[in-house]
Length: 72
Image (cartoon, rainbow, N blue to C red; front, side):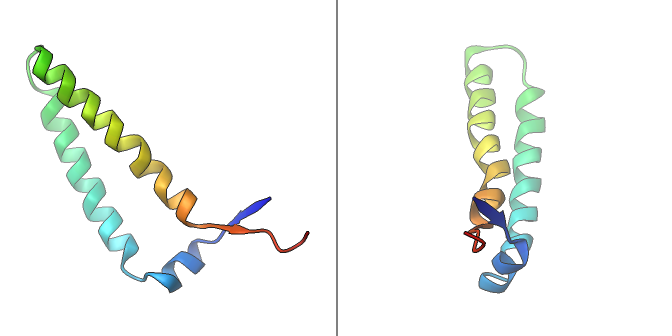
């Protein structure tokens, strides 16, 4: 089993929340711009890149904060 320890992540790298927020804002701005483009093959490719980047960006804090459960 794994536990999530966001406090451990903050102790190890105090600036991660600031970088994560800035990256999230940039990703949202990119996504907003890409989805406003008219339909074209290039727009679909850029939208695909958005989802390719968005999923790992959302999951990364969960993976980074995972710590082994010491109860076993």
